[in-house]
Image 1 (cartoon, rainbow, N blue to C red):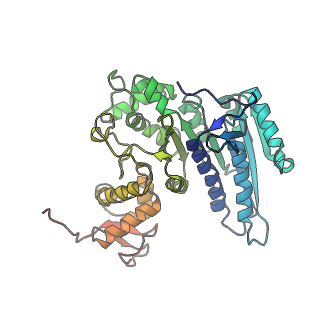
Image 2 (image 1 turned 180 degrees about the horizontal axis):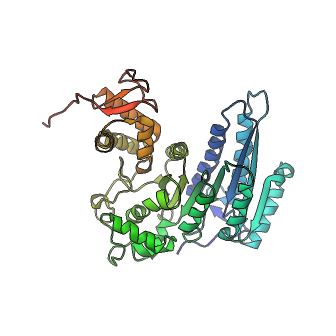
Image 3 (image 1 turned 90 degrees about the horizontal axis):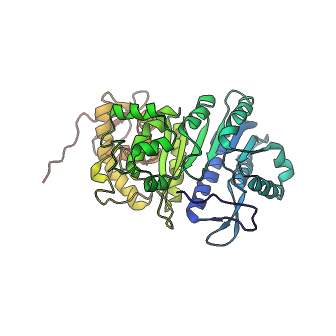
Length: 424
């Protein structure tokens, strides 16, 4: 089963491995970029934001490599907001304030006590304490009170949930749906110990049930046709591709979010990956998280193809049936992805957008199917225009040179005179 939960207050700090620090880096970087995007208007004077850490822990760890004490997610969130606010105020005539409220939830009394002591030692804690709420208890039981408090803050209710659970049962699917039903503008970072699911559970239905997917949802997805998946097959264990494929609709439809990144963090020590899922109703948010995966590299993978339909089950790519190259967000993966998209994008435009499609709508239409960012897709479209496979026209019908990068409102079409290369 998943590793024992971290413990604080017993005389020694829990150790944190490099792959978990990479996850924390993405979290801190994302909060900073999120605030940067939200505060671009120089006339803006205040940004209201709620940050909820549902499995907060004790606030600090011992780095497994260096032996140094490093911050946990509560401190990472506090530091990211403070630093982003300082960056946003550079060059402003009127100061801009990030009106952030932090909700730190932890069920273990000893861990809560340790977290409070860690926070109290922070240099700016006297000011920070006014915007921090520490909840002792199980996150699911505290969620409604937190949501009610957030909703009292205004109409937009911008909220970021960090749900870094220890295993795979602490955040059932209906709980995520509760978040998005109450707060449509929310974003959720969720970890799922999927490596332990594939190791210890027998069938795909077992895996989906443990993740809290309602039985009627599992039945509906299977009726709609999940090629290659038999949820009851005792001979087919719930491998990563199968679980990912089964839950595709769950994380983009049933929980109330439209966009998500289903990438894996891989521990080179245990060799058991876990999901770091990001869910949101903003395509821009989806793109920023992908950018960060490409920047951090090394500790992140996905187990689908390099082009589109990365979530689709293909027995020719099943690692249990045939070897395949891993996709680790490095330069070789980027080259394979680019080459695969050169074939996949014209095929998608032809099959789904036969009348043409705005580039921004193309990005929205495929972003859940690929590891490519908007920039990666723009580079592919530009090359296809150069090669005469696609054409692009400006929003007002103006000609756009094939060598230029597409704008979001450019109309992308299959070129009327496509270049065909005969096989040798």
